[in-house]
Length: 79
Image (cartoon, rainbow, N blue to C red; front, side, top):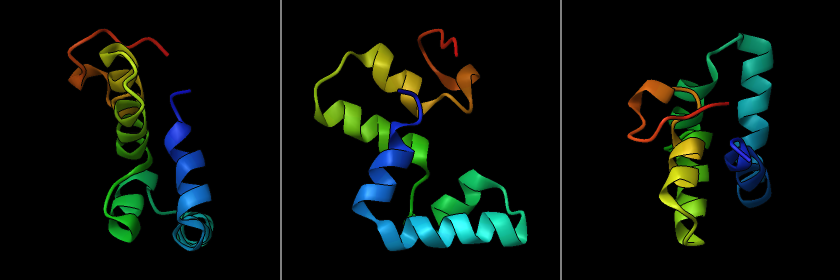
């Protein structure tokens, strides 16, 4: 569930998703900064927004939003 933002991105912004995939493969660019550059947010932020929009518990929102930076979450995140 923590990478739900990747699924949302692929379904909602397929051209952006394809560009990100192409560039991570060809340029070996770090994923989060590249997603932010291409889409304006990275998959973790997108996943957290999706969970928030569906009124899921804050611990799930933070798990999605901070899974790449768990030290920033206010709830303990265990992946």
